[in-house]
Image (tube, rainbow, N blue to C red; front, side, top):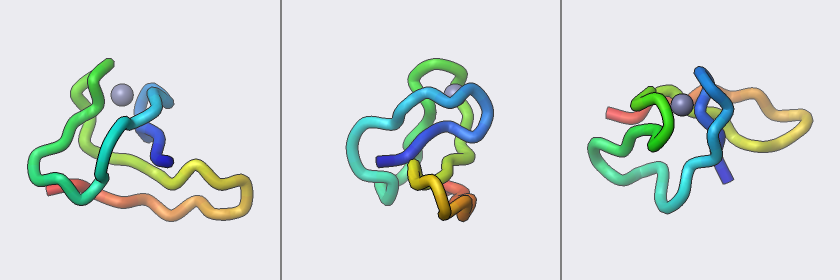
Length: 44
Ligand SMILES: [Zn+2]
């Protein structure tokens, strides 16, 4: 599960999908929804 780094919206589907964007704010920066892991991923 991933979350938008901008608004915190949960991202549905595969983070590896080309052109994926946050449905709420259109952001393209996400992070894994894990308490101890804050690794940012930038979708292309
Ligand atoms: Zn967002």
